[in-house]
Structure formats: structure tokens, C-alpha cells
Length: 345
Image 1 (cartoon, rainbow, N blue to C red):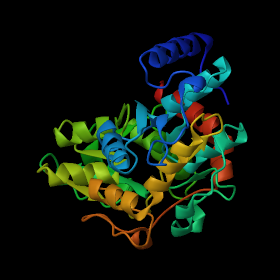
Image 2 (cartoon, rainbow, N blue to C red):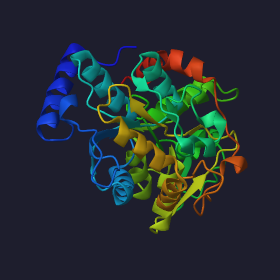
Image 3 (cartoon, rainbow, N blue to C red):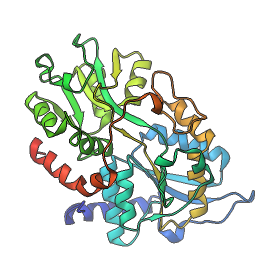
């Protein structure tokens, strides 16, 4: 799987060195795995994530209440850019990240196939449904994030109940969606939707014919629809509910065809020099306390002892659509290439 050209890799490597000099991670030898005076993990760990930065900071703040001697630094970007950075660092012989918290299990399968992940059977994994935990304990899902449709009810009165409704003539030039070349969730959705009977590549071709705007990530879709620049967008659930809660005239639609979903897994890098702290972070994210924090932020938790946030369905109430993870992994780059050619990106 080819992620970067030589020029891009050089830029990333330069950025990596600047990141280390700024104290965001440094070389593996600079990370200390020793325990603090209270016997708990201490030192530095670096988290690479596609989570919104504000959410990542809330997670770290809560973690630090329990583990105050661990300094967590963050690199945040879209999943595709995060993984490109990891691969560039691997080529340079120095992976900075200790932990990854990014979009989907297909991404983690690609890293697992490259022997980049370290196994850790967290005691909290027994509370996560088995289908969301890697059999080799390289990663585990942390939440359920569905993709559906965001509609600005002030801009359009068109009734939207399905993905197919986005192709209505009344919504020509009124729809926006994230790019699979940037967003890991969008990449996953592309793989699933193009393999779902009744949707397929024809859906994307028809979206293009209807003047769909392909933007960067889900955050861009949220801003465009909330502002009324577009009437509707394909987007992840929690962003819509946050906008609605803040007073925006928007609604979230679970599509009649079904909802593709990701679980935003977490996993430890094999090269982590502070595995004690990295494991403690994984434990916290999967714990009841960590899942309650996620629900409080607006994500649907995976643990059955934590309720879904108001306005979102639990996994048992959602009509989900999925595809074989191995197929998605093998065809990921081909899917992105075909999308790039279709939309001239």
C-alpha cells in the first residue's frame, strides 16, 4: 500500500523532527516508562488520533486525573494523514506514536499486517462485545459512530429519509460529503456503500452528476450545512447532534438503506517505549469511566453498562450495513484511486 511520494515523505519527516524538538514525543529513548512515586505509570506518551482535538483533550484531562504523572502529547489529523505520517516515520526508522485512536478496524488491520501494533489484552476488553475486539488483542473499538445524513431544515423542506433521496433534482448542487482521500470514516463508507446492493458506485456517479461538493473531512461538512451553504451532507452522527444541541436548524437521518459505522479503535504501537503508560491509557478508554466520558461528549458507547447519549440510537437499534473487513483492507487503495479518478481529485 503506497501512502506517500518521496517529496511528501520528506516533508513529513522534517515535521516529525520538528515535533520531536518541540517536545511532542522525542526519540524513543526520551520516553520514560518508570512509575511515579505513587506506583502508577509516569513519563511521556504520544497519541496520534483523528478525534476532534477538543474531544482528545477532554479524554486526556480525565485520564490525567487518574494518572497525573503521565504527559500525553497529541498529533491530530484525518485518519489517512495520520497513517501516512506513521508510515513515513516507519521508513525513517523512528515511529513517534505510542498509541493510535483512529477511524476504523480496516485501518488497524493494515497496520497489523505491517507488524506495527503491539498486543495487549486489556482487562477492560471483556466488557466490549467480542466482534469489536481484535482476536490477537492488537486493538479494540471504543465507540459506535454511524454515518447518515444531516439536513438543514431552514434551507430545504425536502423530505430526506435515505441516501437515494440525496439524488432528488430539488437537491442538485445542495449536497456535500467528506473525501475518502482525507477522512478514514469516509474511506470506510466508500468501501461499504460501493459493495451494498442498491447503492454501489452508481450512487457516487449520480452524486457527482448532481453537483455534490467533496470537502475535506466531516468537520467541513458540519460547517457547510449548519451555515446553510448546503442543504444536506453525508456525515457522522455525533457532529449533527452537537450542532442541533447548540441551536442549529439541523436534523440527523439514519438512512433507510442502513448505516455504515466505524468503532474508532485504539491500539498500541509495537515500538512504544512507555508501554506501561500506553496500556493504562487503553484501560482508561475502555473502562466504564472512559465510556461514560465518551457518552457525555456525545458518542455511542460500546459497553452495555453505559447508555447512549440523548438523540442517538444504541447499536442494537440501528440498521447497520457493513462489508467484509478483509475485502475492505485489500481494496482500500483501489477504492480511493477509483474515487479520485471519478471526482478528479
